[in-house]
Image 1 (cartoon, rainbow, N blue to C red):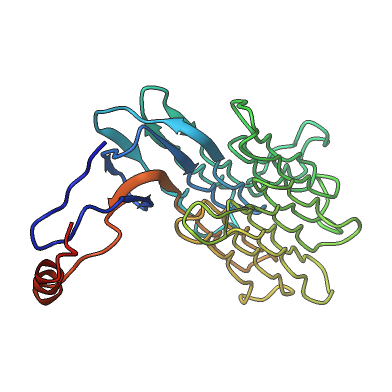
Image 2: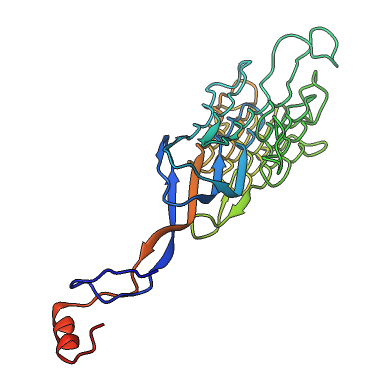
Length: 324
């Protein structure tokens, strides 16, 4: 097929294709220039509570068909962090991200970390003792507090899996000693259980690296569980956030008002928020989940000419008889 870009732009040249990358860090509308794409959809991460929040669902679809019409793109916000975790409060799940093409791709929100204590007994504890809670289900599950399991990941199930479970807390739910909270799940690994016979927090699960944007970036790491400290013992460290934007859990001191807040998940990674520490009268806030992201990579999205000529070159080629 003959192609011409004639005039003063240049002679006939074979055009080349170039990748077109469109990143959404907030909701919007996508208009395709190609018939298919490589697609990444990451949901908002869950917030921490006492335990770490789970990462937002991570879905990489290669290839994915594109319609001729505009596509609505929804980028999920992270779950809001919770102030004053010394009271019985639950964390907040994140929000889903959606690429609403003819075959919609939805990534599920990250599950919140396990909630703080309450005055009623848990299912394993006798009346009058403190109850703790499991992490919430989601794209990746939130971590559990003592006596609580981690939330399930990849909920609802898709293939390949969009995330992992949170870790389990350690310690009998009715005691105040040797208890710890777990990390939230990441897209690439489960959250770490709370360390045995320790009040330190478990680490968040690792995320997943992806080069769809043109360079490798890791997304959807879980939030770290918080350190807990109720006795005359050294401070206990919160768990590290998982690679891919997970927030670290707060560190616990000993009955002082200087417990540290959980760290929020990084924006546009879907990372889970870190858990808030608690040591008696001290008050700390849990970290928010990181917002999600949608990236569309069109391998044949744009056309570029192989060269241009200025007017002097054009005149020279014409007078020399070499302009075709």
